[in-house]
Image (cartoon, rainbow, N blue to C red; front, side, top):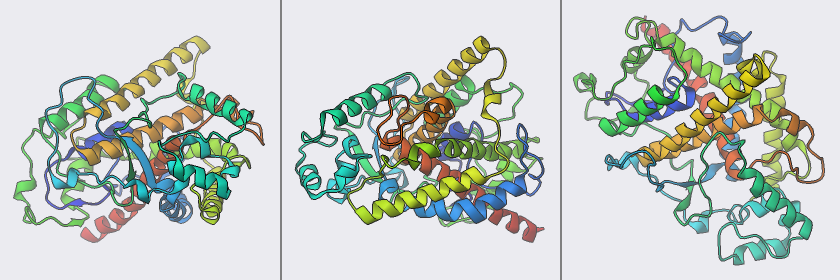
Length: 427
């Protein structure tokens, strides 16, 4: 569901519940005007974040998401649920995801990981070889031994224990490319016991939270949507009733503002990760390759420009405080955190709505990649300038997920400003 936009009058959906796992609270929708001042656990104030996002980040991240390198995401939407038998597959048309025909995928992306950085891949011979590849992800046989060695190392590192997410096997016949621009995140109508089981499993079994947290959004509870005069007449736009139900301090027993602050906190986590990973992309060896030389150069320039903005933000939080304390205890807590989050990523394969599953998997992988970056600072600092590193690597899928997940957060915060205006006018 796009933040701040939903089908007016529709009942409760699990798209919001899926995003809940990503934010560890309620990511989508709108902000209440009372959410101002200093953000908890950070020397940041809400207004500064709003202005920074609106005038620096949002316009650029939106353009980046429209670039070929970032609009195509490969995902397996047919992996079975590892925890229970699936019994609630959504047949609503808005749940459907339209895969992208192979012929529409840029040749450099189809070629797989072997071309994710190499500038050599921009020559004509390489393009011909890519087009003749009989299997997605095939490694070009003309590659040097040094490159092959690096690719093997990348694969080995991708299988290491530093991941916070359960990754899809891109080589699986069930994995398909999806054009994210043609399958935008929106409210789908997916709800009921199947959706509630996913939400409940995430929140009750895998989130670190106080037991006193108020959670009113049970999809099995009677919905107030049927009383809305627009019921049955779907339209996209701001839904003030839904906003108040989810975020009004009175209706949520004081929980609404905390949920919204969690959105800002998540934004800062991923913003911090982008500022930390900038040196990885600033190297000349990193090439966001699609096969279009000019397009690729422009995409990297725009990405580096975004990194410069993220590094200029003056109020980054200190990620080291997340696992403070003695070294042994901090290591144990980090591992527990990683396993919880990895388990959440596996729950995404239990979501019965394909569009909800798509965006849930992408945003989970995006946040998991951000956490991977934050815990790899030393490795990133040691990266060689002109050759692939052995200590830290990102797959194309992780890069696409990282930037698109952050793009969703940036859009959410931008939409919150629109709701602030609507709230002021409604008073």
